[in-house]
Image (tube, rainbow, N blue to C red):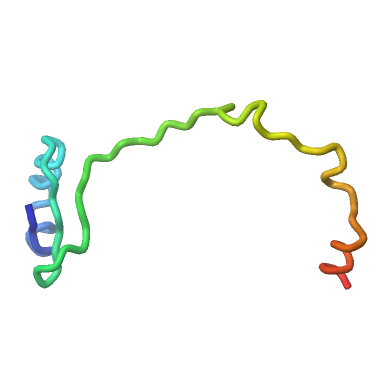
Length: 73
């Protein structure tokens, strides 16, 4: 369903209800699509997903003469 910006502002609650029922609502400006209303789906964060997959060397934070010269001289 394509609606113009004025219709979207006037009927936002009704459009949201349609989206919640599974309908896709496209908002257009001058007849061209510019935005899409879709249901919100929160992203699930998985903690520890990289555990055991990343290694940090013991010397990762030691000073390196070449790098110091590049950034500080």
